[in-house]
Image (cartoon, rainbow, N blue to C red; front, top):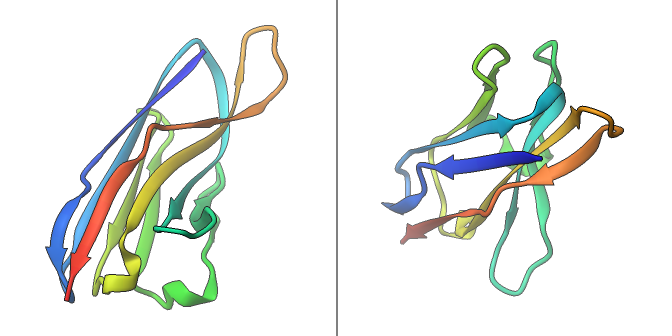
Length: 120
C-alpha cells in the first residue's frame, strides 16, 4: 500500500503564505503524477496543481502564479508553496499521487487532507 502524510496547513491572514508538504511511503515501485487538490466548504474537490515525473507542471487559471508545486523524486516528497493567500483559498488540501506498487497496476492514492484557513 501507499501512505501519504501531509503537513503544513494552518491559519494565515489574507496575503500570507503557507507551504504544504506530502511524503509518500510504502511498497512503492514507482510514482507517476503527483498533485494537490482541495475541497472548500460546500464545494466539490478541485485540482490545485499537478506535476509529472519530469517536472512539468499544470495549474488551473485561478492559481495565477500564486502557487508553486515541486517534488523530490528521490525522497518521494512533494510541496506546494502558496503565496498571496485569499479567504477563498480556505479548504482542506489533499495530496494525490498516481503510483505503482508491486503486482498492481498504477492507481491514485490520497492523503488524509490538511486544513488551510485564510482569514480576511
